[in-house]
Image 1 (cartoon, rainbow, N blue to C red):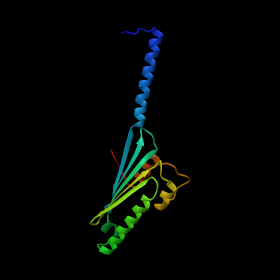
Image 2: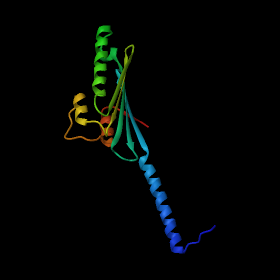
Image 3: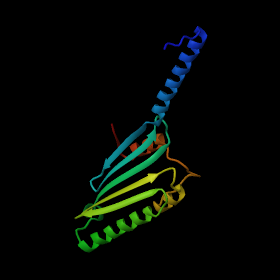
Image 4: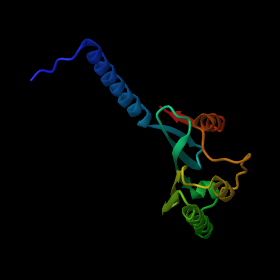
Length: 163
């Protein structure tokens, strides 16, 4: 069966279909998750920071920080007791982070290397509590992480963006 329409109705239908298709395409672009990664290796600690944003938005939805810390180089000793003290501090730090809403933290040790992963869901975390735990001072009320600001700050601190 073939349905015939008058020209204005056919044009309107084509326009509506085109508008719907364009809306779906644009919505798909906005929903795409973008991953921006920075790394730094100072010999004692290897750090990888990954920021997730939606589309071209500047607001970070999730941040993942991965640390590989050489306890011997960081603490300047091979004394097992001192290294164990450093390991306990890392464990306490991870537990404190994991208690915050919107934060997941894990820590493991393989000989003298400590591996820590901290994931922050920026929609759920209380930035003031997180900053206090990390001994950072916030300039005013903070309710998000801006990728442009993070990029500038990390590059100034010697991080390199992974393309």
